[in-house]
Amino acid sequence: MSRRTKKHRNANINLEKKMAKAKSRKARGESVYRITELVGTSSVSWEDAAKRAIETAAGSLRDLRVADIVKLDVKVDGGKVIAYRARVSLSFKYEA
Image (tube, rainbow, N blue to C red; front, top):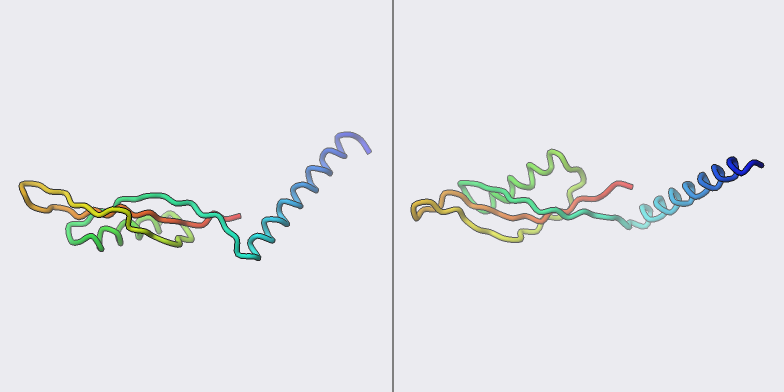
């Protein structure tokens, strides 16, 4: 067997082992998640601001899992509240 053929065979075996390991983790329910922060705004309420952030993210991210409200604040102009803002920490699952 040539050195090149042996190298490719070893690479294939390593890849097969990695795939089997990933499949095993998936079967056991082990996962990897990414957490990202978003800020939603609304002229209505903090709840609506958080909802807007999550629904907007759902348009481009799949498998959203958990959303934590990190911070609530308001935008003030002329002594009046003009916008509610919700900072949302959102997690989504990486696909193997």
